[in-house]
Length: 225
Image (cartoon, rainbow, N blue to C red):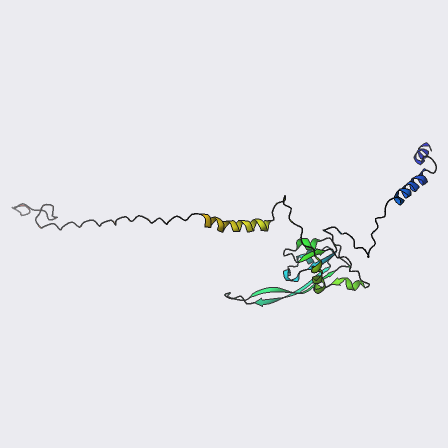
C-alpha cells in the first residue's frame, strides 16, 4: 500500500499535469497545415509514386522478380533488328505491358534500386487516390506520365567521391591528351650491315702436283720382281 500511495502522489496531481500541458499547448502558435489549400513541404527523397521511363526498360525482369509483393506485371515480345555489316539480324525485347498495382505496393523501393538501366524513378506526387481499387493498377502509359513530376537529381557533394562513370570518362579523356602532348621522336632506322661475302672457291689442284689427291708412286713399286 505504501508503494502505491507513493507512486500516486498527491490526489489530483494528474489532473493538474494534464491541464498544464493543455495550457502550454494553447499558448503556442498552431502549426497545422491547411491541406489541400496549402501544399505540404515534402522531403527531397519522399516516396510518392513510381514513374517509368519506357525508353530505358530492357525487359530484364529484375524489378518483377525482386518485388516482395509481386505487384509488377511485365509482358514483352522479341523483334529482329537488321544490323548493317552483321552476318545475321539481332533480337531485342520490346515492352508490351508494364503495370504496377499500387493497392499491393509497400513502397519499399527495391524495384528502383535493382533496375540496372535507370528505368524507374521516385516521384513526390502522392495525390492519386481512387474510389475503385481497380484504378490503382497503373499501366506503362500512366506510369510514364509521372516522369514529368520527377525532380532532378541533387548536386554532387564536392567533398564526396566522384562517381564511377565520371572517373572512367576522365581516364578515357586523359589517354588521348597524354599521347598528343608526348613529343614524337623520329623513327630510328636500323643500321645496315654489309652482307657477308661467300668464301672464295679454292682453285682446282693440278694433276701430279703434291697433295693433289693422286699419290705419286715410285718406279718399281707395285710391280712384282
